[in-house]
Structure formats: structure tokens, C-alpha cells
Length: 105
Image (cartoon, one colour):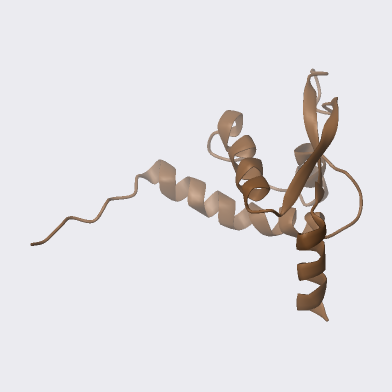
């Protein structure tokens, strides 16, 4: 019996391509000491905007959180122009930082 494979939509392909492009920057930043926001990493690494900025930034951070790469540390006002809304601050987990250091030595 032939079961058809799911077909990826253009939006899904665009999202997956975006994640593949930006995730390494967040993993690298998570291996460094200190707290940061998504916006800080976006600016520092000159990352592209996702196909759906309203949802994809938070979705990526949730994935990294559930995978144990990052952990929340608090809230701070956003640095984006025109808003002072609170945004989450993050840091890399000890487990991720240790694992990353072992890979590079």
C-alpha cells in the first residue's frame, strides 16, 4: 500500500531554511557568558527576519528552551525602535555551554 508523503508548503520550506540559517548564531551565543535578548543576537549576528516575525522568533526560542540550549533569566524592555514592551532575557544553559566547549577542544 502506497501512502503519500506529506508535501511541504512554500511557507514551511521558507521557515525551515530560515531556522537553518539563524539557529547556529543562537547556539553560539548560548555558549558565551551573559544574558541577552533575541533582538541582541539578531543585531550582533545580522540575522534575517523570519517569514512570520510575529510567531517564528518565539517559536525558535521555545525549541531552544525545550532542547536545553537556553534558559530564561528575566525580562527587559525591548530595544526595538518604537516600543518598550517587555521581552524575555536568556542565557545558555550550563549543560549546553559545557557540551559546546568539549566540541571545540
